[in-house]
Amino acid sequence: MARFYDTHAHLDYPDFVPDLPEVIQRAQAAGIERINCIGTDFDSSRRALELAERFDGVYAVVGWHPSDALRAPEDIRPTLRELASHPKVVALGETGLDYYRLPSRQPGKTAADDERYKKRQAELFDQHLEVAAELGLSCVIHQRESLDDTISRLERFADRVRGVFHCFSGDAASIQRILALNSLVSFTGIATFKNAQNIRDVIAAAPEGKFMLETDCPFLAPVSYRGKRCEPAYVKEIAETAALARGCSLEELSQMTCDAADGFFYRRTTAAHR
Image (cartoon, rainbow, N blue to C red; front, top):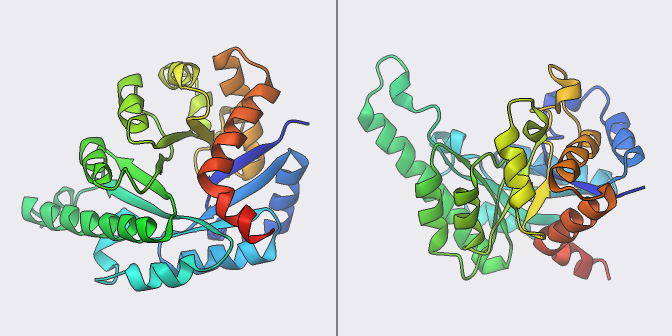
């Protein structure tokens, strides 16, 4: 059986409380060997660490999501350092910039509120990047309607920090800008949607070793499961779509994406467990 990784999952969400052990078992049965549980704030990051301790093959990414930037502590770096000291932490994040739901779209909010929101997101993103550079970790990057600003901030750390632009849905020109920073992209179940030929075209053109797979579960279930909760086992369906797009075997697709993830995420944990 071809092996796979789910490099971005939110297993700590309430959606998985009723049957998490069964979710993990289904993933293992589908050949999903490793799952990254992604933190979205410090409570979420601690839950991710608890799950990483509880289940073999589950690892943690710790950080603070940009959409919640306004409620973050002023300086998150001390807590990031503390959380990242755990041997099963494989990256920081998810972090980045998200301009999709700006405050001015709400009653009573103005463009000045938007600028405050963007400024706070940028400060938190920089703090993640600073700690990542200090500790030799990579960053899981969230960007939505903010590609230029996200790349601009990452550029200042590109010689020290690698990023993976998760849930990538951009075009070939965008991926080249990301790869130029020694960073990667990751594809979700969106690639299986009927109207996502553009993403399949990008998958077909992406250089080997420069992309990974994820579910972003419980969101973005592949087309066969639309409307249902997504879970890590569904990486296999995403991989089948990616292999078809690239005209390669499932085993070849498995090898190239797992090799990319091993180099990006798991070098630290492999060394720690020797």
